[in-house]
Image (cartoon, rainbow, N blue to C red; front, side, top):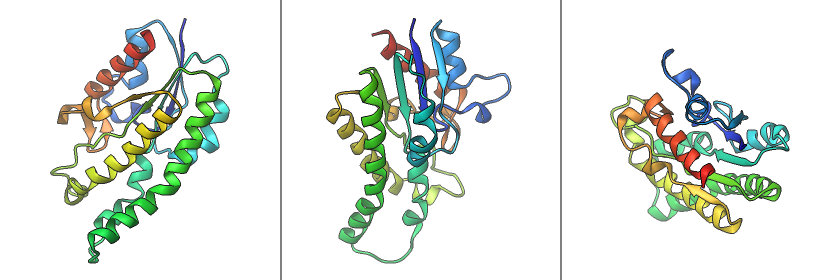
Length: 203
């Protein structure tokens, strides 16, 4: 019997964003399998929160672990993208790398910790969201893709360094129906994500 621990943010802890008759990611997982699931993920958490609050709660009997974190770290940099001051391309890229550096360090520390316990670890990238047309996010909808790509490079590089699997959420959340709002998974998107997680556990 697999015992799957779910760490991260609202990509997994999305119950508050789905309708009363709809299912969260964890509920989809439980409906589609007989495995046990421990949700440590908390809506709004960042890499700092995973280090401070989630790792210590990880059950020792976990056979598999799923980590989906980083989106809120990027949201914390949203005003960097909205900055209207004029910078050269070089200056913008340098600033972006500097802003991601501490996030990268925390992410690698998390993965190093999790990978030491057993090799069954799945890292999730950050998706791009359904930002176009939203009153707050629309003006950074395309620029944000660059920041997402830069963070996801960290995810893939870290996964390779520690020899763990990576799930590309940008290939799963592909339509507006996959989102309950511009940045949270819907019932539909959550079901697609849970299917991919279960396929990984089953293999």
